[in-house]
Image 1 (cartoon, helix red, strand yellow):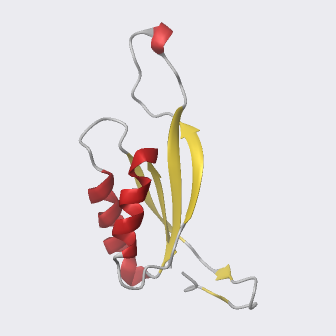
Image 2 (cartoon, rainbow, N blue to C red; image 1 turned 30 degrees about the vertical axis):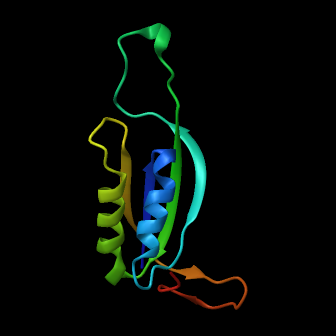
Amino acid sequence: MKEIRAYIQPHKLNQITLALMEITGFPGMSVSECEGFGREHTDHIQDYKPFLARTRLEIFAPDELVETIFQTIMRVAHSGHHGDGKVYIIDSLEGGRISSGERGDNLG
C-alpha cells in the first residue's frame, strides 16, 4: 500500500475527482484546503503573496493501482503553467480501520 499525496489547483478538484472515480477499484480519498509556495517567485515585491491556495489530496491505494492513480492526477491536473502542483508517492507501512479494528497494509 502507498499514499499518493497531491497538491493541486483548487479549480481542478472536480475534474480530477471524476477521472479518479473512473478507475476500477479506486479506494477513495481525503481532500483538504491548504496554502503553500514553491520555488517560483515574482520580481514585484508589492505583488508578492508567499502562500497560494491549493487543494491537498490524500489517497491510500494498493500497489497495483498506484501508477494509474498517479498518472491520472498528473494528466488531469496539467495545464502547462507554473503552479500546476505536485504529486508524491509515499510508502505506507500499515494502517487500521477504526470501525472494525482491522489492521494491515492493504486497507486502501
